[in-house]
Structures are given as structure tokens and as C-alpha cells.
Image 1 (cartoon, rainbow, N blue to C red):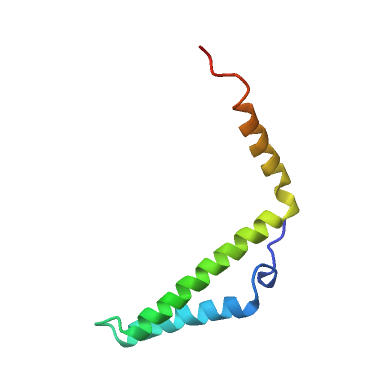
Image 2 (cartoon, helix red, strand yellow):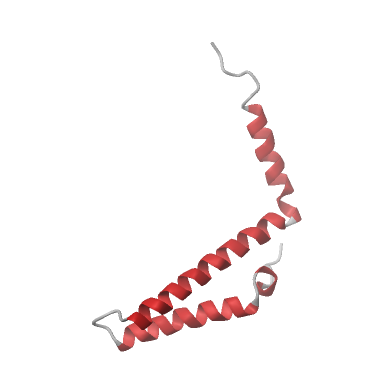
Length: 89
């Protein structure tokens, strides 16, 4: 299975914005090493939201992929097997 194109998972602006915000936060923290100012904290917040959005989009992409039907079927069979009267006495 080949790796997906990042543009298939999320828009390119989201990838670039998250990366740029993370890099800017690192540079801001390096420029002001003794304190985390509002700019650095804001950039870290934007990068964190971007990462969460990318993880969400990745999960949506993975779940919509047709290759996971075997996994879903196995989970459904395993769950249904738990109701099969194997409670013992």
C-alpha cells in the first residue's frame, strides 16, 4: 500500500500553516529564551490546533478508506461473539 498524498488528507494550506506556525514558535522561543511571550504562546496554540485538525482529518481519511473493511468486520464479529452465551455458570 502506497503512502497517501498529503493533499488527499487535508488541504495544503492546513499543512503549510501548521508547519509555519510551529517553526515560527520555535524561532520566537529561541529569540526570547528567558520567557514565553504572548507571540510564542499564540503560535504554539495555532500549531496545536493545526495538529489536532490534521489528526482529525487523518482519522476521517483512514476510516473512509475501503481497505479497512476487514478490520471493521473482525471487530463486529468479535463483539458479536461476546454475546454468544459463553458466560459459564
